[in-house]
Image (cartoon, rainbow, N blue to C red; front, side, top):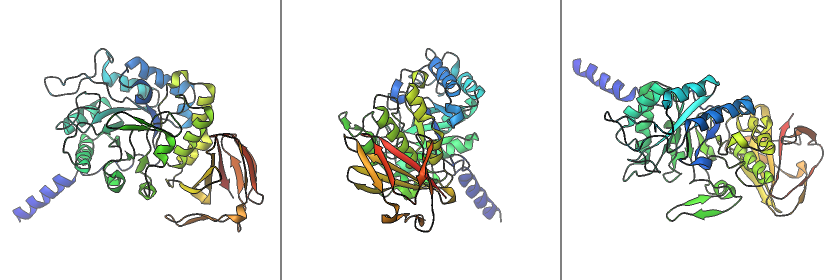
Length: 400
């Protein structure tokens, strides 16, 4: 009997923490990350300024809540007890005080680390310190952990991320766990039980459709990222989403390209993580990023990743099923010239085979709303006609 009890105790002790905080990220996380614009040039005044801008410029009201510091927030060495230390020059008040400031604004605070011995920028990684680091983050009140994949030697990706998942759960402080191993180890096949979101590609860069080489790795433009992976949309759903990387809206593309970028990340049910300096964003950038109609498509409770319906005549058309038999659609002008669309609903059968859903415009009449212009533009009883500028988008929501 004692042996049976001991075996039960061992089973419970080894499985008690083998889970993530399931209640988090039931829709894709919305927030801001420092890397795209600032890399390691970060400090506490930047974070406070971003938090203030969240409130001042309507990002918080629109649903954004996470402010995440990426690589470079810590000192180059751990302290005598093996703890990570916030860089005293960049963050003289420490991470607990900074987290408290962010929380005082009604927002949440996140940090970065790495599964390897060092981070991608050469700071202390978490390999061998997972439980210690997770306890430290919990003591600071951290709400989100982005976990990278540099300097990992021969580590097994799934196993390494499971270790940090278990460490976070053991620390007892709920955190969104963001897996960032660039899609190299097919995280969409195992990430659901390990993290809340997982990167599916390498790093994004602020261009429409380009690849920029860096020797052994590349950065990818918006459409390169969209087209990189096949057959992964079935992996996405409430609590577990494909992550197409932080956004480049406001970082040098045209306003039209920014709108398309934002629309597509919303259609793909990707986390909407801002990557620009929102403190000095233009009015047009703010208007795009705080568009509640577009954000609502991203935040739909079904959590379904959209799919490409067709790619013809210079247009890409994407569709995404929503709750209450509603649908979102985007018409993207992929060309360098202005184009006209004349979409006959009776000539197209639109559906999502994975989820068994159909847009039946023959039996039902749907009202059409132009989301970026926030206006009604008719119903599906008539052809949808519009003029779309180069690299711009018409994004609509269909409702009975």
